Image 1 (cartoon, helix red, strand yellow):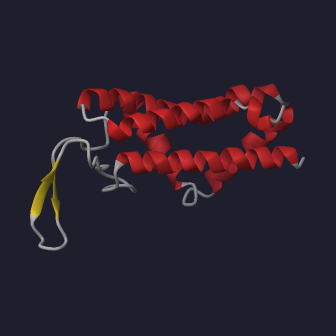
Image 2 (cartoon, rainbow, N blue to C red; image 1 turned 135 degrees about the vertical axis):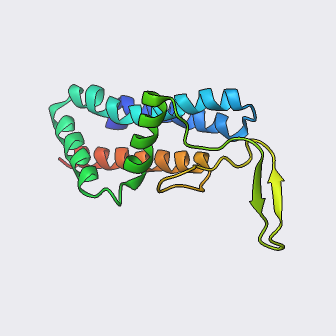
Length: 162
């Protein structure tokens, strides 16, 4: 069995991808919000499961995971998606139940004629502030998922090369 087959963090990541897929087509604010809470819990839980479950299963793996976390802390700019989205959105949503995105009809300026036109609910859900302000929250979640895939793959490579 390869390490990829045994890391529980991959299962959490897969569920997070499923939540993102559900968010892509959801047009009910109530359902969107519930799925968002699940997605944010999952995207942060990947790290917790990696550390507490996967790391506790193997001392070598635990060392690599702890080393990886220290690397993420050392370069917060390269790992910005973790610090400025995964961690911060988890704190907002799960600790304060505050949502950092706008959902509803949104007026946007059309570049061709500079007119403001309204787009329907759920088509564009921009993050309201911080590093990712103005980006659709689903796109940022997708970036966080991609970041986790890279990190999990790097951990696997380090483990296999030890």
